Length: 168
Image (cartoon, rainbow, N blue to C red):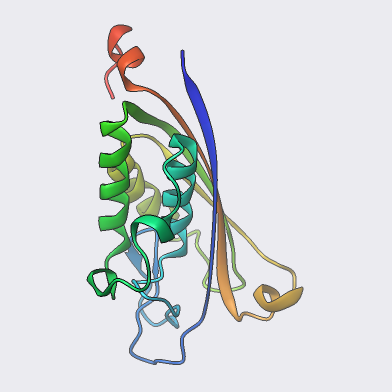
């Protein structure tokens, strides 16, 4: 069986715009400061996308969705995930799983974790797990200046999966 692993990372600082929504894993966190970015700045979705692209050897988010392209200004990052999953399928890959570690002092993720996991799992076609971690006051993340996410993705040859009779 052909398996490939990819790693993804994303980080965004908090926005000064009080109207900016905080979006993590496709979920809007009402009442929380939003993150600064060209799209919706969803660090979890961005790290997942980077991991999937890396595993398939298809470059990175900046190559496919550059911040100089106005089509992606304010974009819902789940649209980016959909496009990445489509690119993987064209290349013959399917997602086995994705695991994410979010580094943030705020907000607390536990109450929304299951919702984020369900949304992202449905989009990528495989289980996505999310864990929250604190930076314990160290550096910019520890001072609540932003949020970061690390993701690891495992993909497999969709053709081999079909030949074994396994449904995606």
